[in-house]
Image 1 (cartoon, rainbow, N blue to C red):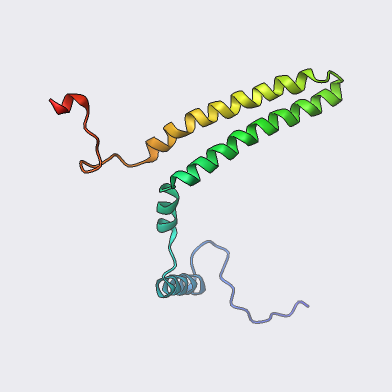
Image 2: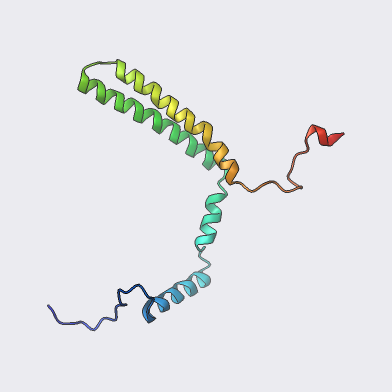
Length: 129
């Protein structure tokens, strides 16, 4: 079992050896040939979320916050035998957390979006004069 199989593994000193650089070149060549998006393309796709995906994300996060709050309240009620008070309090905390997140997420998404060009910009009332 201690015999060497003759595998050509790269050294573990962190420097790319001939095998790792060859592998990187082969992966890059295969991506170009198969027209597979690279890391930059995937990042650009994630930046350009559609309205439906934004709505689904915000809705699911809002519901998740409510369910987590209600679940924690229910478990605390079972443990402390204060039914239904902690369930109601934690349900309200879940609503507040979800609402705060849903209220702040569009501002974050708008900051990440590129500024509008002149062709897409809507004129203000002051510009109409």
